[in-house]
Image (cartoon, rainbow, N blue to C red; front, side, top):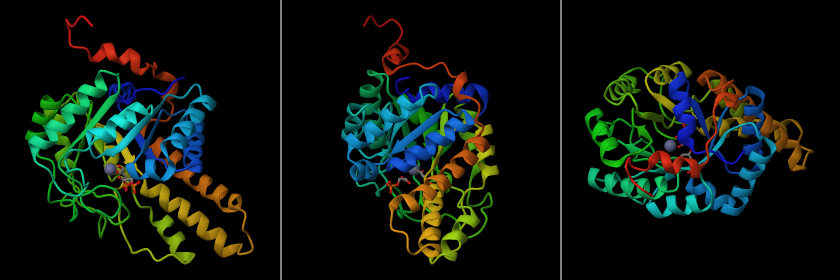
Amino acid sequence: MPLVPMRVMLDHAAENGYGIAALNVNNMEQIQAIMEAAKETDSPVIVQASRGARKYTNDAYLRHLMLAAAELNPNLPIAMHQDHGNSPATCISAIEQGFTSVMMDGSLTEDGKTPSSYQYNVKVTREVVDYAHARGVTVEGEIGTLGGIEDGHGAGGTGLEHVTDPVQAEKFVADTGVDALAVAIGTSHGAYKFAQKPTGEVLKMTVIEEIHRRLPNCHLVMHGSSSVPRELVDLINKYGGKMKESYGVPIEEIQRGIKHGVCKVNVDTDNRLAITGAIRKVFAELPDKFDPRDYMGPAREAMKKVCVERMVAFGQAGNAGKIKPRTCRQMVGFYKPKGARK
Ligand code: G3H
Ligand code: 13P
Ligand code: ZN
């Protein structure tokens, strides 16, 4: 089937009380790992590419990898999502490349680091919503900012400086018309989120609960949601890595979020850890190897295992076949204001 707008999947997830992992992709093995995991668990798939990923791969390679995933898995709905679009231009170029969903992250200015004003955020997000919805493409916005700048987007700090204000979230959704809303609850991107297992003081799940109470029909998104499994960090360090002790977002907290309106859960770091651990192991144990397949194969397998675990834990497993797919073209009518002629 053709790539599916993310909104179709999020609607199904919300109606049926599960979440969908949004998994970042930068190369062929990562797409293969995700698709193998989805096939094994009958899961709908959200694949996302950051600006950095698009630059690293080149859009044409990325697009064809996605088309290959769809061709090889005709029964699995797949959405292709722009992660942290930093400007309308980035989102528009993604749509031109066939992405079926975009994130306009106007919580930060175009540099991806500086917190923006509410007015700026509304303006750029509204612009993308108008452009994308006219083409049936889904839009995710963000209000509040994540901490850290170690990987990708973030405003620095601990993540507690710009936690989402639920009142402002409600207004933002009304002002922009986004399909999904990323909220800031104290997480940050990358491996170093919390110095100890997070309590409600630093991981503010109650903020999600309050936003969901105010916006029961809005699909919420948790970014920075890798769990940073101890065993993956230990494996990396066992084979020569030098990662500091760290804690991520516990799976049970994500499951709590899913009970309160979270439909999309962004996970990238856990897959990076799995890949790195597997490659380090081969390099350390089999130093005579030099064929990339000897270490990229185990890396792909290790990432697949993480993806399967998340797909099962978030509840998306078993749902691929239950989603009635729609194309972007079919979604144009869904967004057209009632009474509009064309
Ligand atoms: O935004 C965070 C994701 O993990 C993507 O990271 O910008 O390094 O590709 P990236
Ligand atoms: P992690 O770094 O926790 O995997 O978060 C990924 C993310 O939010 C991508 O947008
Ligand atoms: Zn993110």
